[in-house]
Image (cartoon, rainbow, N blue to C red; front, side, top):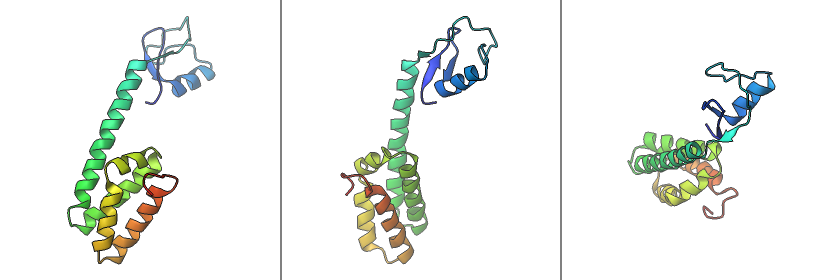
Length: 139
């Protein structure tokens, strides 16, 4: 859920989903099927703040896990961690900040200099390219 809203019945929905529901001609609560006298959508600020907080905490855990795997001296874990970094970057450009804050770019640059594996070096270079593209801090 990204933009939670509440209906007059107290049901909370994702804004885009309930808007589609209403656009399809439905004037009922999708959960209770109660006819809605008022279709005003009220932002559920507390839930949105909780979602944002959870995402930030989740990113911290993901970054920490990636960093631990990068430092494990296992090429398999290293390649998996680089794939996870690339997935984070594709998921949302703000994740480039998390990668920077977690010092992952510094870590993989160090690994790049120490690795003998051409595959690992190539994957690191691709990941670095993705991480620095459009991001001054990572450059």
